[in-house]
Each structure stands twice: as structure tokens, then as C-alpha cells.
Length: 392
Image (cartoon, rainbow, N blue to C red; front, side, top):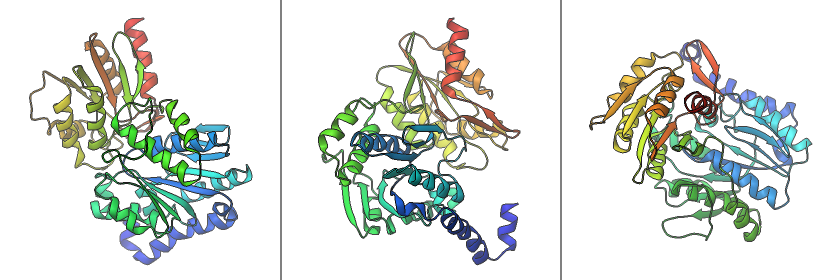
């Protein structure tokens, strides 16, 4: 229906309609973004982890902080799950949340900012004090009409931000840095940045920790506080989370892009045999990446179970076939099990001591989206339930 309307109604009217909602929300909730400092985190991967770590750093420094991530909403000590199946809430919801944060006397709001959200003007009438760029790899390419449009959408966040924090190791760093006319900070793992340590696994989490550290530094937080906070950081739910430890580790991760998937596999592979459960989202979302996901899985995994991720209204078997088309190298065992619970059960049944089971694509998301609607879900809880069935 939406696409039909866009074809009939002139573009300027559609744009006016979309921009009307954030303006209305800002008026109704009395321009709440002017009452708090807003920090926006954008990039393809790492946004959620950076939001959580930056929130912890600012709280450790004594500030009252609110935050929005794909996992949760948080205002001070109160937090609740993000069950919207939407990383960046709608225009009225964001303004309402900002008003709630302001009324609760929060000094900061740390939030994920997505390209889809920017495309729909959800960022309008929010004064961003800080914009953080984590990294950029292809995602939402089809919905944006190309990678460059995707990049430009992300870039909108930096045009009015007072401060930019940039991952200098990303090839798009200069593009995002040039858009910000205010103060700029850069961080790098390759050429050395600041000396920090974190128990979070993987090189990608070192990047996330550095991004969060520079959020703190940009706000005058003492380096000692930053280091202590990151040094005792706990894992983010559904992000490289070890759900089961014995008789073999079972890791659940949100990785749903080729770049993120490869980083997860690289981090855990070592000399271990990997038993991998993966799929790809339906609903016309980034079909290009499906064979890429298969290709990456074939490179690192010893046994692969292809399954549903979020098929929406697409034929699940077709999605699996497109992933499978990228698997050209020989795999000792390849299974196709549409029922995600049964796929996880299969992985736990065939894994042996010394192996690692990796379940990717959903992390701690609370819903599985099918053609019939949403189904209550949590990969971590499914893993635990299946483990009890098998091992007692």
C-alpha cells in the first residue's frame, strides 16, 4: 500500500507528510531535546554495544542517563525491553521518550541512529551534541537505492552535530568527518589510540570500547573512570553471549550482515570445529547479502544448519536456497531446517566436546517475524530450553 501511495502522490507531498510528524511531536512534547544532551551512535555494526558502554561510562561519572538501543529503553534506573522490532523508534515515540528523559532530569540521552530512521526523518528536531561513526559496510542497500545513498543517509547525522567521533580505521572516515563543522575526535586500533582494556571478546569490541571511551572524553569524563568502567564491562545481551559453557560453548550473536558474521567467526574459530546456525531476513531485505552469508559460513564453519531468521512474507525455502547458492566450497555436513528451534536442537545434538556452536542473526531479539505475524522468541532462551531437553 505504501509503495502504491508513493507512486500516486507527488514526492514533495510525501516528504511534507513525513517531516510533519517529527515537527508535531516536537511541539506536543515541548522540544524535549533542548533539555538534554543527545548523543547519536550510527554505523552498520556496533551501535548497540557502543550505546550500552557509553551509557555506563557517563553513569559512572555521576550523570543521570537515558538511552535507546535495539535491546532496551532506559531512563535512569528504570529500563524495559525494546519490543518494537525497530532499532530507532518512530517520530512521535522518540519525542515522547526525550520528554520522559527530560522530566526525569536526565542530563544525557544516548541513542542508536539508523539510516532507515534518518530516511523517515525520525532524527529531525533533535539537537545532537555528539555524533559517533562506528563503521560502514553494505546494508539496507536495496531500500536506499544503493550504497552511496545509504552512506549519505548516515551522514545527515553529522551535519548539525556539535561534536563528531570517528572510527579512523574505516575507509569512510574522511567522508563523515568532513560533514561535521564542530569539534572532532578520531579513534584507531591500527595506528594506536588510547590505552584501554575490556573483557569483551573480539577486535570489533575493542573498536566499540574505543568509541564509547571517546564519548566519555568528549564530555570531560576522567580517563580513570573510563578505564575502570570498560575494564569491568559485562557482555551485551545477545552480542557474542556464551549461553552454554559445557560440554561445549554455545554462542548467540546478533550478526546479520556479512561483515558482522565474519567478525564473529574469526573471533571464535581458532582450532575449534564450528557448528553454525544461520539464516537471513526476508521481507525483501538485502537479498544481495544471502549468498555472501553462505560464502562466509562455508569459509569458517565445519557444519552448517541453514534456518529461518525473520522470513516475513517471503518463501523461507527460497531464502535458504539463496544463502546456499553462495556455498561453493565443500562442507562436511550441510542441513536445511526451516524450524529455527529444531535447527538449534540439531546443532546441539551433533556438536561434541571441543566444538563451538554459533547461533547468529537474532541475538536477544524478542520476536521472530513470519508471514503469519510475530512469534515470541529469544535465541538465548531457546538454546537453554533445548539444552535442558538434550542434556537434562
